[in-house]
Length: 179
Image (cartoon, rainbow, N blue to C red; front, side):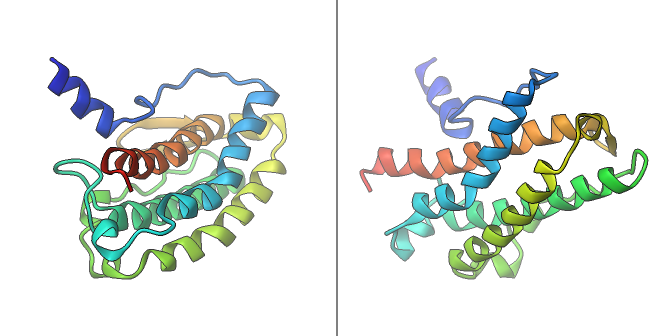
């Protein structure tokens, strides 16, 4: 049983995502702050790691630190576009993508600095956009072909969690390895 728990902890170091909305204005502001802090937190999580450490998986069978950082950039670019679509269109259908296949494309062999540098201005714009939302904007919807209809509020909660989830993959690996 402890082996199963340890494996689950490595996969979901902060627990699995659970939508617990509707959220208060204070909770929404906190989630936006999580997105504002991601670039700094992600950069800090990889600071001082050497190439061997960057190429280490965060768990057996999991992505490497490098793949994880590049995945965050890929995922959050998609999220930014999804928020913009939902803010400007009525219930748009958003495009899912195969994140596992994306994690194996050639560009994930690039230095993590490429994605870290991309995430900083991306999150600046994302935070500016989200801070401009009115209460009614959080109720705007998008359709994910695999997950169904999502509100902007739910998408915010997902990406607040996602930001902390992947930083924790790296920071927990560092703790386990003594890096």
